Length: 400
Ligand code: VJV
Ligand code: CA
Ligand code: ZN
Image (cartoon, rainbow, N blue to C red; front, side):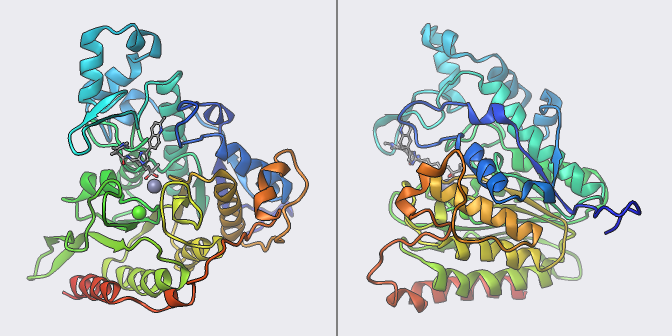
């Protein structure tokens, strides 16, 4: 990778926009965009910044966002301000509710929820995180980079005509469409290791044989969004009596940790690669699947989470790495920093270097690879019968 001038060409590019980290979902909301700033500070402190090129790009346009959304929804988002919303114009509140924005009555729980609050600079935020994923997709399509990173993207729940689960617009759908429209990639694999089901991306592509969506997620009880059971496997006819899989779900029980997760992840990804033969991979690396997350109850270690990235990187396909969930922000930054190192191909020490956000890491003993106390970890090494059914179902689905 020598450019002739003796400097090494970088194969990884990343997107970072400081304006995103100032976005405020509200004082007690669980989504904290500041975590991408902490991630970057850690990446800098480890000296990884010189090993990547930074993508400086324009925010996504209305036209870009219409790749994934209804124009009316996009226009409503563009014009929505907290001032107007709070002025309590009845019509605007009703329209907002229709798009799942602001306070929404939940039929299931009989409560008012505010998962997707009407916040300051909402439109700018949407344009910027989507702009990053779009630029990252284009960087891969150009052939110049092998891996492109946008830790502020990965908002997998947003649908064509509505927000959902902290996600206003779906940058992933926009990025995948851009990859396909470029013409270089015929088939794109979407892998989602966020603790929640990647429902918005799944819905967008369930009838598109060029995209296979695979989500691993906590499933059961009232866990959001309650979709993504293993029986939801989808396929389309593919000529000569063959079928082409379009979606795969891998539901996991609360408490699933590294051992059990990887009994599923490696074999499933390997089979998917063989059957689907993708030309590029988009991976949503939501960090709420880590142990000790404030919202979810899976128990991956930072190494276990990053092993997913390194397994996928191992196939050598153009790879788009996105963020997503992750609600214990020191864990999130540790994880995404370590995964950035994995992308670059550098080992980094466990001791978190001195830097501005040092004090955030006290509870994990200033170590990247933090430990969550867990007495029953031995039991978790073996697959439970439910997981055996899951893997058999998924493998059978891919066998046909
Ligand atoms: O479970 C839900 C919906 C309810 C919301 C909570 N009420 C009390 C009951 C109904 C059904 N929503 C989830 C959404 C999770 C989104 C995950 C996003 C991602 O990680 O997959 C990708 C970025 C949920 N879980 C927790 C909360 N909402 C939650 C929302 C709040 C909150 C605390 C917790 C909204 C506002 C405030 N606090 C102030
Ligand atoms: Ca998932
Ligand atoms: Zn999540």
